[in-house]
Structure formats: C-alpha cells, structure tokens
Image (cartoon, one colour):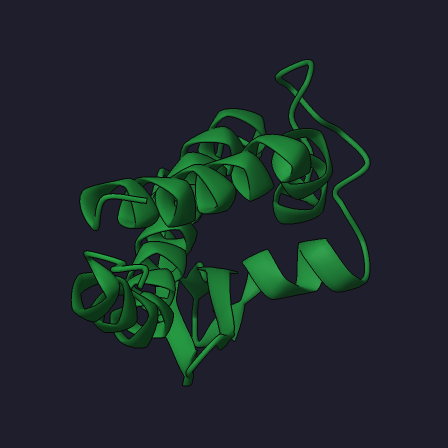
Length: 133
C-alpha cells in the first residue's frame, strides 16, 4: 500500500489558485498603470500644468482573468478637452520642450509596454509564491 500525504493541501491550493491569479493580475495591472502614468507625465507637453495633472489611471475593469487597465488624459480649457484633441488629431506644431509630445499616452505605452507586462507577470508569480507554489 502507498500512502500519499499532503493531497488535501494540494487540492485546496489548486482550488484557490484562480482567485490568487486574479488578485495578482489585478495588482500587476494597477502597478503597470502607475508606471505608465509616470512615464506619460514625463513626455507630455508642458502647458499650464493641467495636461500632466490630468493623466490618471481609470482603474482596472473586468471580471475573472478578463481584465483591462486604462490610462486617461484630460485637460480642459473653456469646456474643450485639448488633451484628447492633441492626442487624436493634431499635436501643436511648436513644441517648446524637446522630447515631449501630444501623443504622450501612445509614446510612453509603447516604450514601457514590456515592463508593464513584466509587472503583471511578476505579481501573478508573487501571488502563487504567497500560496506556496
């Protein structure tokens, strides 16, 4: 006869794994959004301060493992959202600070994309590790 010990603990760990993965993924996306926000502020055009202040995470949405994080950029002058306009249609021709752009979300997202994915993967790994995997 063979006795296998630890099976109940293993089964319990397998049942809690999806929850831990979701928690890790959500936390990783939140951390990735913070990094993206920081990078986007560095390359955003300098204006009255509203543009850089208006770059904010819009939270993590979704259920299960179908999650997504969004970073938004809003800056209003007279009811007009010039941050969106610059990003989608027309960056100002005269940029006074080299290295900045009206497409700050796109530029920083492309440059930080791999690092953000690494953050998500690391947080999922950490969630597993906390459960003893």
